Length: 584
Image 1 (tube, one colour):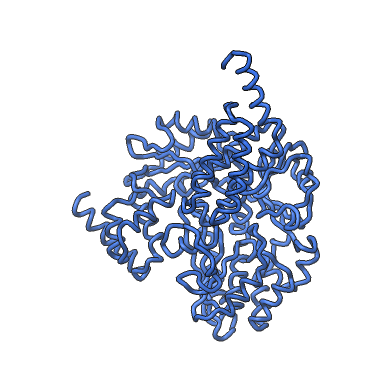
Image 2: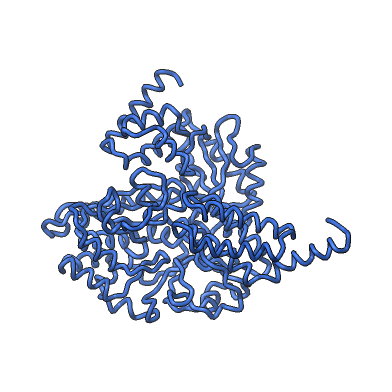
């Protein structure tokens, strides 16, 4: 690097560090800016960042190496990331992958000799209902075919400007590129005409009364765990300490899940209104939206919504004339780490750390972001909050079951006629859902994404509810011809890639389960060893530190339990061949 370039880079990093007040929590956005402008993060850049933030360079490198969207290796001006998770596989990802390699003359993980293109895999882009999907820098292409690959690459080449920085963004404005991301949402309770009515209703009550309304409604978190929302809010409201935070978990990285993407793009005010209500209820003045890096194209939409709300006095100082109630919302981007969907890992990421889950206790409600009381809820939970305040707690109880109150948004993808977002009351059976989406001939349904479980056709009368089969909303439909062993392999490859490696059960257990699936594919896994693998999966469920490791074996265990005929058939066939004295 020339001395003049080093000076310019050093000044740029200085400006970024100053913007974040030289605080560690600015580390991730600083690194993201450097990566965006220079196609990699050099040793010199890491040294400068460490110096300005008063941390050790190895800590900076530890963060860079943790997130898949950051890189110390020089990448191309156009980074193409192809989704490799199961819904895109079912839609024909493999042919797209081959054609990308053919057109670019490189393999995945490589950069073209001219420095224009880098090719890599992505773990779910949140476009499961319209795959195969890929990202070119921050721009999304859906329903990609092998034939379209050539046009996409040629568009990038023609868009390349006189400088690398101009060329990187030119594709987004090129005349041949138009967004083909569809929402596919059957509008229900989420299509509110006046989303700020919930906030107006909240400000007419005392903060504690707002929390009591949430409690009376029976609202549980819509991220999958189903923790009662009011408990988080009560504990944070009572926690000592002046500064408090409201964090919206928009890190929707679960394969097969894309409902939050639609809420953010089509109904952002519902989420923002719910966050502001939460801020009023717990006494917080700051909110943060942690938006997954794969959804960076939604930033513009969010910033516009935030600007509208500020101009309408729905954000800022003395909101809607309520003297003393000040609340602001910031947007922070993730950088490609599924584990950051876990709330403590998310907070670590916001603080400029590797996204590794914390030991609990203490809990975020008293020791959260920067050690301040923090509540973390997901997009759908906040969206429902504003309806509860405007319509009353009884409104939510009109549908659902006794233990699972209200409706739920479901992201439906895979082998069905009508993939998309659907709103159903809790308690709907899998069979009823499949009838609505045109998937009646399914052999199995994956409920809850990669971390969920595979439900066979014989159990389609089970209900989607906390008391039966709980889910964060992902429904992947597998048709009669689906190879369920390939499904298990795809999910385990995902977890092997996304495990933070912090605890042994997850770090080693996922590797061993994947090795077992590969043996099963070859017909070389004994029944005894299969049972040992199942026991290992059960140990992982109990001994892993966080939800990622605890749920990683779920698909493997349910598939090896319910589809033994497919799996054991391969084992028996191999034994027969060996006994007959012939070998493949």
